[in-house]
Image (cartoon, rainbow, N blue to C red; front, side, top):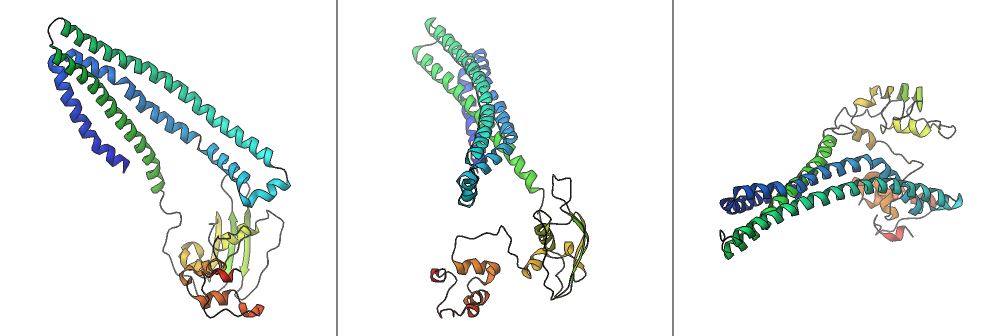
Length: 342
């Protein structure tokens, strides 16, 4: 929308420049040319500097993300106990500070260079405006211009330079926003990370892993390598292993959150890669070791397992198995009722 507003302002700027140029050019075409040329360098430099700033921001993106992560570790409730227990505060703060000054120094160096360039070009523009005023004053002193025309010329020169600068600044802004939109379109052209559609999963059958391997990006060693496994319908299976041995990764591959880098996962003889992911997950439940505790009521936390049945109080009550702990749900129980959390 900002680009739309800027685009709507451009014709008005062009019209104003044309009108002012007609006034100044009628008296002195050379003065008109000199005024426009003197007004251009500053805004043109702004166009170049805006692009340079965007490139610097892109270059610093990784450092800024990491700095934000350190800030979260230092300030979040989830990390507080470990940060204190292992006295990590000074280390994390030092790393945050190092990244802050690394980015700040780069921005400062660019700001200093750009400010010096803008100061020089502003001086050039001011010199051009002063020269135009001097020429107009000479015309008034020599009798070529009367007092009223002289005053109008001074205002016209100032307005012309301001309008040219404003037009170029709008173009610089539009160019910068268009550059950012370029990143957006690159992202949009990636397409959906998980395309919809596909076959419906079979109602039953075994889950079979055929030589399944998975390697995380940026890693040279696979987290899973040639896994062969059959999970038969009705079985209860426990995966036991050391930390980092790939248990969680295997589960995420099994439920389709990760796609194998080699091999296949078969549901009832059908390749998981060709199944509708939403339909597959409708028949799955997962509680991860890094699970989310939503800041809502207990009833809502339970109901999120089947969000489409959020207001089915009986289903929520059955899911938490009140009968098993000797507690019967109230007749007026609602998932959003805070009394269930108490």
